[in-house]
Length: 353
Ligand SMILES: [Zn+2]
Figure 1 (tube, rainbow, N blue to C red):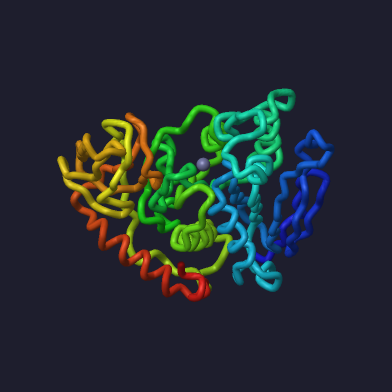
Figure 2: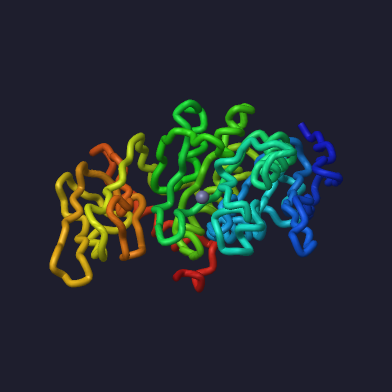
């Protein structure tokens, strides 16, 4: 079959098969009359195929996703000559929440969380209107999506994919992504993933690294994951896209080890460490060193998230621990995936941090 794709319509724009361009969808006007847009890069393959979106900075301070989007857009597999072979369409939105991005903030100026405001309405709050625009222009035109996140500010996540328990078919694509961990987690009320799922469109949520920081391995895992999913969807061929050297660690349950008191945390474990039940994870001390409280693991598992801020309050989540069955050698999996990313010719060695 050698049929040609039809032109792709989005907003006021028409993109011809075998071409790519950035378009600006108007969102709002700031109080000083600066216009705000949601910019979308459309890569429209010459051949028909699925439409996939990749979105980042729904939380404006989660900048790792912006860098992943930038590198995906510059991947040789998506360069102009390759668009003759590309099947389907990739929509890349590096910054969904421009307001938060400019202010280094998770939120919108109305202090709402965009990822709790989906599907939104045209006449709702600013967050609701932006969510509605994203649903109308992006989700409704797509067959599948990947939403790139990091941990919140002062926290870090081991690279992980979140999938919904209601959509087991998405698990195949989650595994193809090749992140170290795939966590089946409930969809949050008002999230993009939930709103898309209501429309029958599956979204993988990628969570990696820390808010307002870059993390080279989290970036690389994200870039190679997006390309691998495109390969799994048959949008791209195999050229230059490696399969993951180890299988992702699948987990369905996780918990937070919380601080027993306010004070200063000395952590003894970090993301990627395997912990046993009753193991000492860290110590919280008052500033005088008079009261020391131990943070103990209630259950064993793999540390998939951690606070980086040593100043803690009672009840703060300090270590996010995923339940991992014995059949995985978690440390071995992490080692082989990391060394694969270090050696991947897709990335410039100078960028290793
Ligand atoms: Zn987020």
